[in-house]
Amino acid sequence: MAAKTLERFLPDEAATLRLGEDLAMALKAGDVLALRGDLGAGKSTLARALIRALADDAALDVPSPTFTLVQSYDTAPPVHHFDLYRLGDPSELDELGFEEAIDGGAALVEWPERAAGRLPATTLTIDLLHEGDGRTARLTGSDSVVERFARSLAMRDFLGRAGWGEASRRRFVGDASARSYEIVRLAGAPPRVLMNAPPLVLGPPVRGDKAYAEIAHTSRDIAAFVAVDKALAKAGVTVPEIYADDLGKGFALLEHLGSGSFLDAESRPMRERYAAAAELLAFMHAQRWSYDMEVRPGVRHVVPPFDRDAMMIEAELLVDWYVPAVTGAPAGEALRAAFRREWDALIDRLAGSETTLMLRDFHSPNIVWRGERAGLNRLGILDFQDALVGPPAYDVASLALDARVTVPEDIEQATLAAYIAARKEAGAFDEDHFREAYAIMAAQRNSKILGIFVRLDRRDGKPAYLKHLPRIRAYLRRAVAHPALAGLRAFYEEHGILEERVL
Image (tube, rainbow, N blue to C red; front, side, top):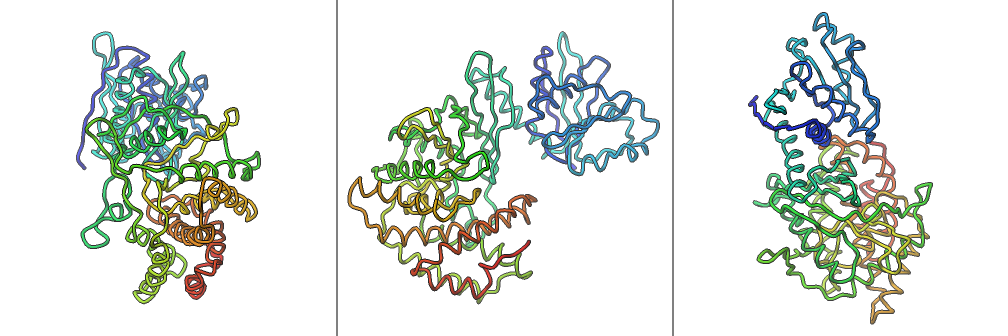
């Protein structure tokens, strides 16, 4: 396995504490960090900072495990701090539960040389070496491991260029993509959000010479986010101010719009807030958008279309992933051909329909409720880098059939009614055609999500998404109840797609 080395000069203890935070932000289950250095080199200081950052508790008691040999912490991921100085023999690692510890968590190991080759090949070794009045941290490991932690250090450098180099970093939220977010805090300033959006790596070709992301028009870098953010702000929509960005690396320092939820204390959707979000959609859909958007002088982003190929390849995730999961065998070509015929006919029905700036993931996790504000400013919008030019009904379906929240049918209908009323108030609006487009887009989106959530489990090792499948199937049953979708409903019923399943 190829080895790679990265060095970082730490002029003082504060820099060592920041390195601990930076390592924590990149840590994941299965990681082993071997800490080496003379007495007083800062191993325990580094470990303590990392653990406190994961726990989001700057005052957490993190005692040295010199006598207990291991201390464990219920963080995400769980982290286990080993001190092997008093280890009598490497075999004693079995008694300490070392392998079990890294099976579902991460390990920090002081005096790793006493493990005598028992550490995994993926271990990241961190040597702390005295240098002048400070120390140098030398990170050595496999290319992929070092590169992951190097990205976190690059994020610290980005913060430095933005004047926030001394900020604390804490995990905020991740999503089903490779993007993640952190809360960064600096004394005397409101907290900000650090966006980490690695440039998209295209997968293998799936249709002709094109990868899935090319056909589905998935954004490849944060230029799309910056462009759409500017366009929405100019139109009067509340989006995060962008204080700094690095288009090449995929970093952005953003305004923190708050954390107000669309859900009540029991995690149930709140009718009036969904209605307000529908009214915001109606406002946006009534605007005249330019789809050739400025990122910065000399850099532009052209919003792609939600065309037939994009709609189809998304819907086909159902036959690519969900059907094999519930039947135990890949979907046959006859089933695939019939599936495409049904969807081709439905996509034909959208021909000539109204199109708009379609944000694509307009649902509760991406909308902040700001109840102290008035009008449209009560809602802050967070996620729009994958925006396309497509049917407005898609975003309404994304909201009213929220993939992460069970929306009762009465709240779905109230959300639809609020949107329709606002569109009619703004001008001529064909309600019947909209309701048909809504049913088609709801069926397309929820077919796609069934496939995505199974893929997240089977391919990406994220089984938590399977708990959402019953909700998505229920939404799909609602969507195909529209008369225009009778053919698709019959096809889905014939192949058991709408049946309750346990995966």
